[in-house]
Amino acid sequence: MIRSAGLNIFLETSLVRKDSIWDSVTAPGYWFGTLLEGNIAVHQSQLGERTWTSGGTAVFSAHEEIHTRHTSLHDGSVSAVFMQVETPLAEPILGAEASSLLSRSRLHREGLFPDLARTIAWQMLGCRMSGAARRLFITGKAMEIVAHVINSTIEEKKAGAEKHGAWSPRELECFHEARSILLAELADPPSVTELARRVGTNAKKLGAGFNALFGQPVYAFVKTSRLDAARQMLEAGETSVTNVARYVGYQPQHFATEFRRRFGISPTQATGKRS
Image (tube, rainbow, N blue to C red; front, side, top):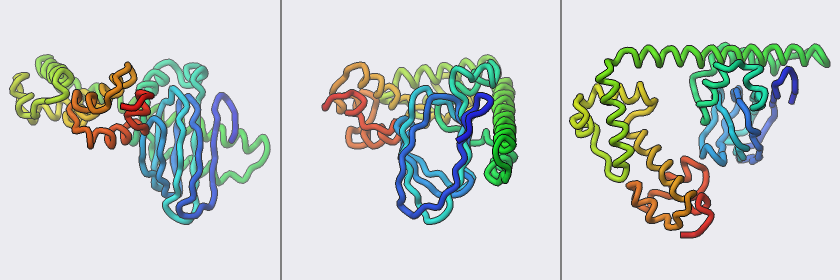
């Protein structure tokens, strides 16, 4: 680990055996990273389960500690490079616009870590300098990666704005109305076809516009919103997991699985009590 210029830089290269397990804690802050070699299953306290393969990347903002358990899926090398900007230093280092954009990205985001940034990460691992020279080289390369990620984030925002500009005010109104209907009827939402009819458009246009405007297809939005609503209910004091599951439209036997997949904890852990 190198601490320099407001960045915490983590460089990792090691040999592991299949089924090796290790734990880590991700501190709050803005994170940028890539797994350059290896195949790893991870279970994270807030983000659930996912599999990392060589070339996998992540850009995210952690607002609290994230506990992670890693399991190696193969024998061989694990190489990774991660950079963290601590929350109080985010605006001075990244600037107000960039830190604001990244703060909306609580979960892992693919596609914001350009190929060039991965090449730079390999250069960091391959550095043969030592002492102060090595620290300066690694820090400069880390800043380069962060710059490329920030640029990708800004470009993504511009692309999103252009997509939104393709819709008329009336169409945008339809998409927002559709979203409101879904949130009001989470337990028994209408089909996309029925939803489109109710807001005065067609299913194809609604599907495309909803995804462009809200970043998710209709079915994914419903699933995410159901689970978010369920967690809010449990954390607000509702003690019956079965009642919560049915309230948001889940069969109780499927609810716990989906809840754990999204949040990394069981419904009973969310409420702190047994139903």
